[in-house]
Image (cartoon, rainbow, N blue to C red; front, side):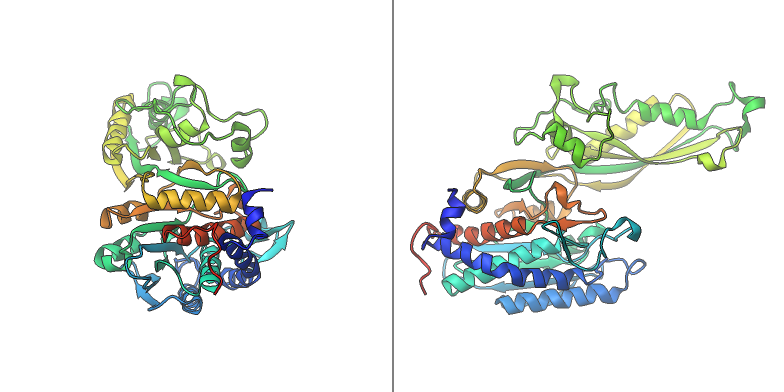
Length: 474
C-alpha cells in the first residue's frame, strides 16, 4: 500500500487531511462548474467585460467563504481585476502566497469541442470545459486545500495570502505592474504558483525552469513591386526566396537551432521527456519523429528546456489560393526565439537579428524586436521547496520530478525580483491529456484531488508540523 493510501485510512494528521480533501472534491466540482460557466476571456473584443467582472466577484466570494481575511478586488494597471486577500498566522509563522488566475483563453472553433466549452461536463472520468485545468482547476485545488486544513486544524498554521489575477492569458503585464506598485500584496516567504502541471498523470512535478522569449519581425525588400516570373524570373532578386534562405539558416539538418554566437549545446538535468509520449502530446503525424539527436545526442528535454529554439510563427507572402506568376519584391516573417532560463533573452534576440542580417543573401533587410520576456530558474535548496517535495510525494505516492516549461510566466520573474528572499514553486493540475488552450480542455479529478492534498500537506509541513503525527484532533 502506498504512503498516500495508508494516510487515507490512518488516524494521522495526513490521513485526516486526505479524508477532508476527498470529502471536499464534490464541493470543488460545483465551484469549478460555476467558474467554467463564466466566459472570462480578458478581451472585450471576444467576450463581454462583464464576464470577467462576474468571475472576479465569484473568486472573491469563494476566498471569503473559505476563510481568507480582507478579500478585495483590485484593478490592475491593464484594467483587469485581481482578487487578493491575507490571513495572519501564528506569531513567527512563515507566510505562503497561493497564486492562480481566473481568466482563460478563447474557446476557438466551437465545432471542435465535443461538449459545450462553458459547461463543465464529465466524460470518461474527466471534467471538460474551458479553464477546467488552466487555471480554474488550479484555483479549485487551492480552495479544497484551504478548506481541508481549516476543517482539520481549526485554523491555518501559517500566514496565508492569496492572489488570483484576471489577465494572465493576455500577457498584458497587469499583475506584474500591480505587484510592483503594491509590493505589500505579494509579501511572503514562499510563492506557490498554481499555473503549471505534471509531466504525466499522477507524476508529481515541480517546474523549476521557464524559458526566456523574444520575437522579431524581419522584412526583406528587393523591388518596389512584384515582377512577372516569365519576363524577369531568374535575374530579378526574389525577396521571398531571400527570406526563406535566411529562415532556413536558423536550423541545421537535425533541427537544432544554430544562431551564430548562441550556445546550443546545453543539457537538461531534470526529468527526461519520453519521446513516444511527446510525439503523442504534440500530435506528430505517423512516419515523422520528434527532433532529437544532433550535438551530444540531445533528447526531448534538452531541446525543450536547455537549448534555444527558433520558430517561424508567420510569413507574409501571397497565399496559394491567390497565386500569380510573379517574383515577389517584399516578404516578411515573425520569428520567435525561446532560450534557457540562464540565457539573457535580450542578448539572444540581438544575436538572432544579427544572424538574419548576415544570412539574408541579398535585398534590403529590416528587423525589429516584437516582444521580449525574461526566463526563470527556481531555487531548489530552501526549506519551502523541501517541504513541498515531501508534501507532493506523500500526496501522489511517487517521488517528485522536476521539469521545465517552454512557455514564459513573466510574473514568476517579477515576483522573484520584488521579493528576492522568497522561494517560488510552480505546480498544478495540468498534464498532457488536459489539452490546455485547445478544444476539449479537461482536468482529471484525481489530479485535482492529489494537487489539493499536496497543498494542504505543504501548509502543515512548512509550519513544522509532522503530518505523520496524531495532530488535528480538535
